[in-house]
Image 1 (tube, rainbow, N blue to C red):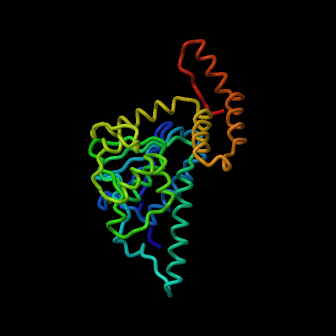
Image 2 (cartoon, helix red, strand yellow; image 1 turned 120 degrees about the vertical axis):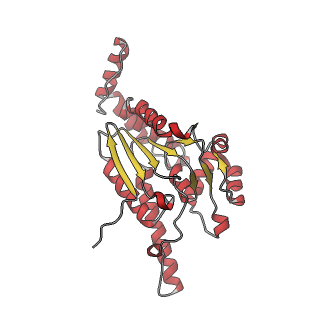
Length: 270
């Protein structure tokens, strides 16, 4: 059996794990195999206490230009129309199970976006906690040009970030030339930096976060995500436990000592 090519590489340097989209000849176009590898890389990271922050970047001219429409091995077939529909349904359910693993990593996730960030690529970018874009980044969802449906998970994320009106405009126009400044104005991204500075800036940003208390970061990330849910679906008991964990941690004691001694604290996530 031939070895699968690596579309997403994992690099760990100190407290930062970096996922690198590494299919530049295809503008990092997304495939079923990309989704599988994203979930697998997330599984490698999620239990590593040495990894404080996750950074995602891409090689080549684009972050991700959307779904790869030209891969024969990715085509879904069936013996009948009904079976083909069923296979589509199961495959897309499987993909979003992989996305769920990545989107729910306990560590903060930073996206470093350059070039095209379209369709599925934008959905991936929205799974990050913070999005930093180069000034050459271009955003859009061209589904209406292709006759494609766009999964409601991605639509829900977009509505929460930019609101219903911008979401409709993005989908209805199918534009692929929304600039980084457009995205910043809409609330889709957090920062815009010169392209030459993107990787360094994002890594420095990640290091700033990595110096803070891991249990507090986990509590904050979980709280934001829970409060974004309908009130009836919120797990407030989980949030209370995470807050109690912070107050009962060695890191809290270290933070208080460091504050009184006017030095930078050394946190260990325990």
